[in-house]
Image (cartoon, rainbow, N blue to C red; front, side, top):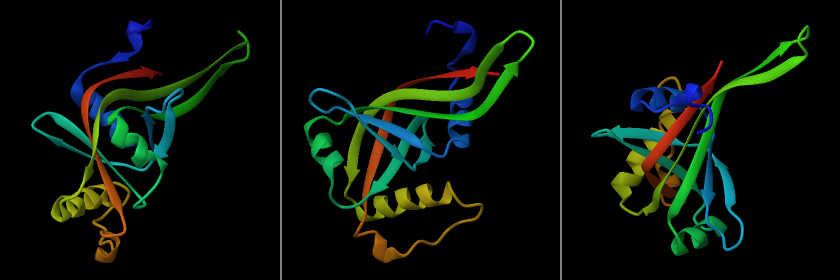
Length: 155
């Protein structure tokens, strides 16, 4: 990273940034160019290991790509604030971001799927949200085991 003064590398600080984000962009390998997908997500930390959960329909292009290569990258950002100094003619954007990589797998076990969907839905609600159990069989759940990540903050 060019700007070491903006580096965020401490695990708990990275988790704090992630908690403020509401979209995670997943980069999946696709022959010539990356396939980038903005997704809602949930997260859990177990034994100092971060897991990100995503959901989707039961079929789609992303799944065929993940079958070929489940190594993915991700990015999320928040705290966007425009900063302008008209006298100096200076304009910039404040932000916080986290990016990383890991391996993604499709969650097949029904109990693990329910746990993941609960984590995901609860991350967007102030109180626990009871989702319709019929959705479990109609939903694909992906679990990203984060292998490395770094963050950056300005402002």
